[in-house]
Length: 278
Image (cartoon, rainbow, N blue to C red; front, side):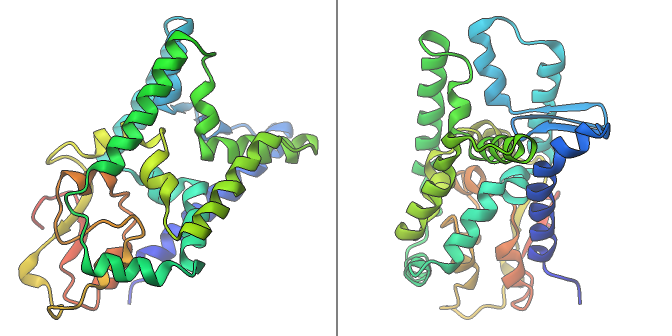
């Protein structure tokens, strides 16, 4: 039997979370095939840049061609594979999922999701877009260019821990990272990833383009669930309904595959596919 997607996803998340901390130590020893942090890094000569971070540089002039190509590459990945950065790479998402899993509120979340599907709720994306838009407006008119980067949790993770690993000194602004996790533990929901993260907005827009790229598909005739079996809904920590794939779902889904895993023993009606109707 094939390992669940969660097995591969956790391995990928852990590799990235640990690997980026060690990068300065490897770079200092001349190993530079990978360098940077999760706002901008070079990978075997290819640059990958956070598109929102690139937009902020417009306040100081036209971005460098290499940076533009790096942001375009990030958007191309989102177009072809969906929000895999959020679901498979982001260290904050990994920590948020773990906090959610051990939260005493999880059972309440599952009960709510099982009785109230959020398949048409586009509000989480609209709030994230508003945060990104207002922040970008402020950067372009009033504030220094890296301002929105202070709201990048993966950026804080890599910058702070790389700094500590290389210099032995903490960056105190990174305390926002554990503070948010603590709040999520009390609230029992992943409010940062759902409602506030500005970095995910452009990735969501490209991932939601119709008929392109890897996406979750639901084949109703293969669904073997009983009428009241809502395991796939309860599996989604972002409160999406895998059975009704609307625009709101496409804007919120990270292609994590948690719902696909629970569906493996229920008819395999859910799967990640490049085809709209597999």
